[in-house]
Image (cartoon, rainbow over all chains, first blue to last red):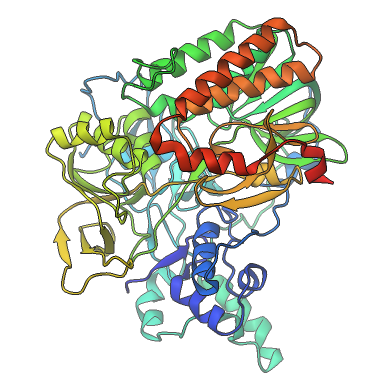
Length: 88
Length: 529
């Protein structure tokens, strides 16, 4: 049962990532598509740096870039975007 | 009934507000108005808040500041509420989000799927994909919507329109507050936002005395300093404070920042200058069972302990020997909680300040370097830890494993700059290990984008006093950029720069100073184009 969890949101383990890297998904963009790492509801706040560390270990260097960040960076309800609040 | 609240603390007094009753799966529980749902549940002895999505592993809260996703529960019928930021209200109904997979998991675990094959399961032949997906989605997931449509949207919901201002400060920590104070005293219209219910950031959680030689910070306890800054800000009529407001996005073309307001509302702010002072996220470690309830971020423990006055456990261990780990160890001792040891993979003696290390060693807590954690023991919550000594090449030394008895593990291995918002300004980013991670290239005035400035931990991981100084400086540079500069401003900039240099002047900071010089350029426009 013991697992080394990298991404808490999508339950991605260290061995998942290592297996994916060995299968050829050896950059952040493809890794994130194949394992779902950094795409959970926290948007990679925990796992992005860990994934970068693991990838860096394989590549033998620090990764120069992360994934592209897009708004919204914090979850918002659709209702709050499309409706207008009534003024008091 | 168990109650993990601290009622007798040597330094802090907890003003918990009115007592209310909340219900967990229909069972009443004692809570207070000033507590978050997660803190109240924790105080009542609840450790498992949710189950993870795939393996249905037990999860407790981790960060306690609404960054991770481990504490999501159904609150008053709304699924996936981050309970660590939702405040308690009388009669609140809290439910754990349950799925068939919770019961099926022992069987599913026996199947032992090889890693990274989930995405290839049930895709061939193509006609089984859709029905298989429908079944799988019923088995597990996160939260369920009501099948019936709710009534008309509440009138509190929706856009609050657009505000215009001179200077928008994102983040109400030491850097953001100091910037607002400096710029506010010189007449600019300022909006300062923070996603918590009060300003102060991490400063409010520091119960130790600052010892640095920066004149306004030394000899004061962190939370006192925070309160003092909040008071200073409230005296400035041109500074508008928006709490419980989180920046959600920045759109460079329209030059507008979108933010989330309480009660499902949004607000747009157009400012001439922006300051990003969003601080940092906690780094974690990868080890076996690193997600079970009882493994917490050091900041999460600090929040629980010093903001809500709830004990995280009876006996804990800390991982990391940076200042964060050392300080949290000290805060735990202050609150009368046993600390079994501070363990760090570092080979140097101690990474944090000697003063802090000495303080906790005086209390009989061992600081053990060259050690790391292999495994957290326990199924539903931490019951112990297995530690190991490290070889010089950072591999675990054979036969050196030993068991430590503890009921919580606190990870304080460092911080990552919170660069999300920074990146939306399209800056030039670099990954710098000394500064903590991804940071933007900036010029001497802390400007990293045409209209945006950076200060504090989100620009380089340092500590509260340097964050204050950087914030103050950024505030003054913005004042100048807004055309409000005068001799007083220039003199104050000089004073701050001098103190900042002095503060970073210790031999411990040489690497840090070099790293900052590396990412500071003369002309930022050149880098951006």
